[in-house]
Amino acid sequence: MGDIDVVVVGAGNAALCSALAARDNNASVKVLEFAPKAERGGNSAFTGGAMRVAFSGTTDLLELMPDLTAAEQLETDFGAYSEEAFFADMARVTESRANPDLVEVLVTNSFPTLRWMRENGVRFQPSYGRQAFKVDGKFQFWGGLAVEVNGGGPGLIEQLIKVALERDVDIQYETRAIELLFDGHAVHGVRVRCRGETCDVPARAVVLASGGFEANREWRTRYLGPGWDLAKVRGTRFNLGDGIRMALDIGASSAGHWSGCHAVAWDMNSPEFGNLAVGDGFQKHSYPLGIMVNANGQRFVDEGADFRNYTYAKYGRRILEQPGHFAWQIFDSKVSELLRSEYRIREVTAVRADSLEELANRLDGVDKAELLKTVGHFNQSVREEVPFNPNVKDGRSTTDLEPPKSNWANTISEPPFEAYMVTCGITFTFGGLRVDPTANVVDVYGQPIPGLYAAGELVGELFYFNYPGGTGLTSGAVFGRLAGAGAAKFALAEPHQS
Ligand SMILES: Cc1cc2nc3c(=O)[nH]c(=O)nc-3n(C[C@H](O)[C@H](O)[C@H](O)COP(=O)(O)OP(=O)(O)OC[C@H]3O[C@@H](n4cnc5c(N)ncnc54)[C@H](O)[C@@H]3O)c2cc1C
Image 1: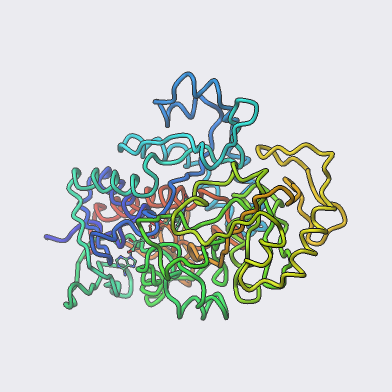
Image 2: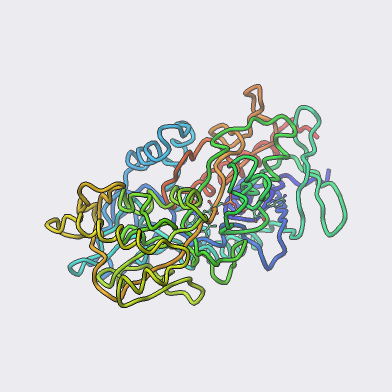
């Protein structure tokens, strides 16, 4: 029969890794993508390409980054990031709710999966600009995140698509999957809407890799709660929750943190959805070096509670909760050199001033008198005797201040002052489908649904409340690879069901 072996829904990182793994296992593969070609790559294309991976030292990293020069090795302390540390980070930031079986799969497969990506031509490089500061002539990596894809998200997608096409994967754009073809026992393909037509795409197995529901304003309000309709979407406009809905419709089990999501500080004047020309440039992730204030002129989070990549994904929600759904991030000239490159983009909503009074006058919507009081109290509470070091949790904290700033507390005292207006930008949603450790979707009775696999953002039970930076792409690649292999093996198994 002429059926395709494996149909993959979506063409982001998880989907393309599934497609390649299915080809590794000799299945014929068709990828169906909602977006037009010009907007391909889903959220994955918007990323900076940071990927969390367990490694035991530079020797491991050389397998992923064989181009590392001797000079780079000499001037860099990459440290190590053990599987135990990765596992512990997942447990800690998710308040021990992440499914340990899935986390085990994620962690133990992280290094082999990145090596497999490298074999497929994906090039990695050290994440110097974002995860290490140069102190005393040496870069020191922190936060378990040393590796990023060369060319970021666009580079990743370009390479994965190139290899997929070379390996005869058929990619069909402007094709929205709307329903699973299900006979009450197994999945046999998908129904799609393609340029005004509805048609069926029969297949022996299906991989759903079509993202979460972050771009669906109605679902955001329904599941995340009031106010989430007003959040900006950091990435693609096509992740509407279709894959999740299609699977629930045939009896799949929902799983994970449906009222939770990844959301960050995002430029106040950014567009409703992401702009591929700007990529992740609207994010504003240097708040650990300064303070954040709301419309009342008050601080509302511990900006230095932990390394940036362990707090940024939950602070978007805190900003959304503030009056007017905005905040200003404030820095003085002592740290301006350390601000990430996204603070220097043309599209930024920024104010500069030579005095605190002038700054307070210029911060739209902020209570000026309260702001000056806040900065005054903050400055008095900084433990100046503790040395500042952005590469470690330096313990340079505030005393007797609520909320405290636990690390990297510097007075806001040296002009010029800079401030950046941010709102909440949603990245992806945490609730989704229940899968087993082979990425097979599980039904409400706890049984794997024959022929249905899932990977990427629409997998539930990995992230709750928070998220360790760089895990989304790794999770998509790990579970995508497993889903593709599982779907191919199922499709090619005898006796074949049609
Ligand atoms: C600005 C930004 C920066 C980020 N930076 C990082 C980072 O540096 N590191 C990291 O690990 N993570 C990062 N993330 C998170 C990361 O993007 C996601 O975790 C990951 O890309 C999700 O991959 P995915 O394949 O599941 O989804 P996606 O890449 O979003 O792919 C889903 C695809 O499915 C398609 N689709 C949706 N519905 C349908 C349908 N009905 N039919 C057919 N196709 C459909 C979509 O068009 C899309 O192409 C970032 C996200 C954003 C938005």
